[in-house]
Length: 486
Image 1 (cartoon, one colour):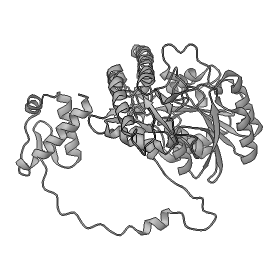
Image 2 (cartoon, rainbow, N blue to C red):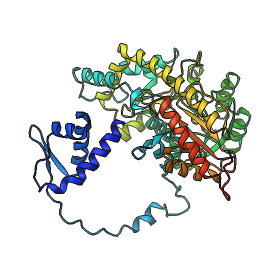
Image 3 (cartoon, rainbow, N blue to C red):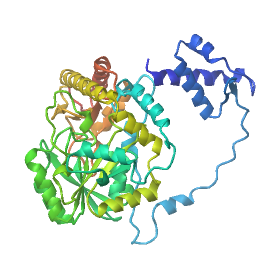
Image 4 (cartoon, helix red, strand yellow):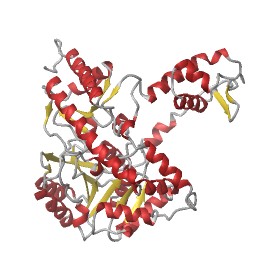
């Protein structure tokens, strides 16, 4: 049983028993709960913490946990209907309409119900996260002089230097701004580079979190189609001319969701098209450290061969470590760097120093290289297992590209896109959560797709069981009136 499933079940059990205790009554000790429910002390600690967060229990160090006093009557809700008018943006034609739709992001962030296999996850499975190394790094960081003081607004110089070396030999520490993860970096770059109402060019399909950030900023995403070699330069050039856009967002390496890598002969043409349009390229290099052990040499980031500052580079430690190590970097050359810094300062002042110190401790430790080697081997193994399972269990789904990096497969459904919601719903009923393809498109998608994560599961055995459940889900749609053929 997974730790988080054990926690959820223990919370449910304890919540159901609280009525046995009067307000202020003491709950059984942690040791008693461990023995009774056959769980670990960590599970008990997390379950009690969750109940405390819900206001159901009160913890007293050295004394234990006690049932909280009964809450007073809940006041009747107020009338918030006026907000619909205000939030709609009504105020004249000059107002730029905005939508804040996080549904595509929440698919990969929300934990599925207990017992559901997480093929929709966006992060490494806890078994692949370097929890011990992170704990040790955080402990060492906390002992550093000034660890809880105010950091430089651009980030710790040592961490900026490290990111610069990671990105490539032509960048230096002053080119780098430390951010609160990759999503924050993308949002900052979009706000810095385009005014509300402006078009922003995006690969189609692309990462839903970027689309959500663009729309929340008031930008208009415009799709540029891809093929097996990445974004098509001829169409990018045409869309630049047609829209006058000044920003193009791309993932040249292990693209999310397709997994493709931009072909070498297209790299210079992409940057040149942006330069001729007087535009920036935001290079989201999120998966470089999610490389598989059979990938071979990787191309350098676009930013390395860009002395003119066309490319704004985004890099993060989050995907390769833990969802909670939200430390990333923006690399830029020229005046735009100051605008990026100013926007981040206005939004959040700086990234908390303890996180920066812990990140620096982690990447400077011997455990870092060991972790990278382990993840590369494990992701390669899980990708192979899921690829084989897809081809044997669901041959009707098209797997156009087998990636050598990243953590997921992108599968095309055999019929029209209308089947996609039905399959996603049937899969959840069968006990496996998958990500629908629709949120990855900013316009009407050419077909239905699903995205399956092999990074978020425990290993080949869980992949095999998940694919069995997905086959069961697909079979439930093979009835008269349904159209997912087998």
